[in-house]
Image (cartoon, rainbow, N blue to C red; front, side):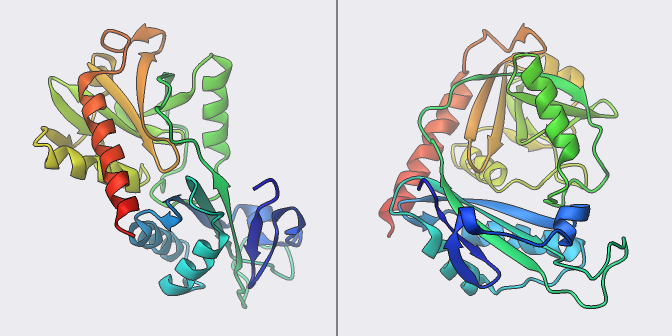
Length: 281
């Protein structure tokens, strides 16, 4: 997949040849949304949940879905390269407008782009994280392409030798700069409840399903920054990284500084779920 194929506005072409006009509102305003969907064994993973989130994001920015779910499935499957572990990135913007104007153009022809890339789903490397005040906007439940605040937060973590920034708003955890957050507090798996301040993660929801299947105590509720600081385990989840243990937070070890027993159980359950998904073809 050195130069993967892309799908741009109705046709397949090499990704290196994909071009959009400079007047595209995604380029000028970040006026668009995106989705990332993993694929295992040549099959898109939890596709309906990802497309439902895409449709919710589109509705939130007042764009109609440009394709049906069946059309998305056909196009995205065509982009996959064999049966290796991959992810598909897709993006929809409000398209090209005749002039640069903040208000929506009278006629909208969305720009639709998608391509696939390889992902590494080997045993995840434990990570270090920092906490940071959540400086982003108020509608983080929209998977918008306007990610400058997330980029700056993730870069600050990198400059401090860490891999993620866990965000705090009014004393409560929201999510990571590019992930959802779980913490084990007094033996209970806790993740912030859904709302406008965090993205409703598809992997997040699956982790909760698996935890309940294992009869592990879990809660969706406010997670105070003070609880995070004393948590026995902290995890990050995302579509491409799956479930990653945090072993250091703000320079202090999380628990004993090693991936914890509940993370191991959920990681194994996730891998078993994937194996059954592959075998169901």
